[in-house]
Length: 419
Ligand code: FDA
Image (cartoon, rainbow, N blue to C red):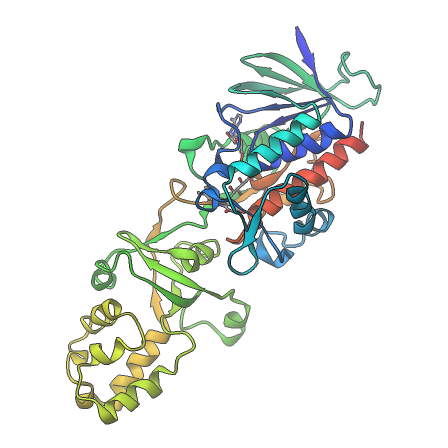
């Protein structure tokens, strides 16, 4: 027996569940398929278990994509205020944490329950765990399609049976955290139908370092401090620097390198071989502080440095240079000015990242040139992509979930309109 649905969504994550719920509530017969036993595992583990589900301020400039304008229409069509209104309807308490980031007061489970309740309200059917073996474009309208739209149909061969549908939505996300179900399914479907891809890469991910230059900092694991961070080298032209995205956030030293919000943010922009520029004492006039200390103090340079950066970092920094292992009053002005400059513009080159095992998202994905920014339908009629599988990647701070809601909503509207 072949099952017929008006729309089939593959991937019961944030984007898939939301899209299915909206389409179901507007009268479509919708099926969601996921190969995992549990739905929305990424929501469950997000935001330290409290899910940073959106941000008060969301603009296209908070996203990376080969086409920075692609996300504009969907983001305008479903805003953070729309999503918070939905939370209020479900009596889900939430709070703002930092820079507009909105989190659940209780647990990320609240968001999952909300999505499942919305799906139930739309009579959305769910098959899980369910593996998709094959997707075929039948090229003709399904005999099972009650409305003669002339649209072609997809046949989906699953381990629970055959399905036919005129609308196939791919919401299988990116490659990060394979142990909770991430796969390259969406990319393979794109390849099958000749759609272009932007090379995927791990993003919002800790960066790793090795070599002699890193050695003094390798014992600082656990140390956190506020920094300003950007990619690029000291040779960058003023024009290049002006264009660079700069983040002012906390940096965390780890056993393998650097993490914390500052590094996760910049990792999405970082390309292999590029260096990072880090101001380890933002907002401080280091030259002035060191020269002033020289005039009045007999302490070691490292001890004086400890008044502007954490003492473990001051010690590590002083250990890199014999000229810094002396009382500050014995240092030359030139040496102190150079020290101030290097601390305010620490340039180091990661050797890589911790990869998809630790990445919060995947940058790159389905090339937006092959998608409609209004409907998320691809050049292949009836085939849609939503959420993280697309080459649209949000900054840290709730932007990736907002993209999941907004792209899912745009797609659901298009499904309803084309029935
Ligand atoms: P998502 O990954 O949510 O869902 C994809 C679904 O497809 C999964 O259920 C998966 O099982 C299923 N699937 C995959 N392959 C399949 C196949 N072959 N067959 C069938 N089903 C398949 N973002 C944010 O805005 N705020 C935050 O606080 C966080 N925090 C966070 C923490 C951690 C640890 C991670 C890893 C990620 C975040 N994120 C985040 C990012 C956010 O989780 C992510 O961008 C969204 O979940 C993407 O939603 P999607 O629905 O596109 O994919």
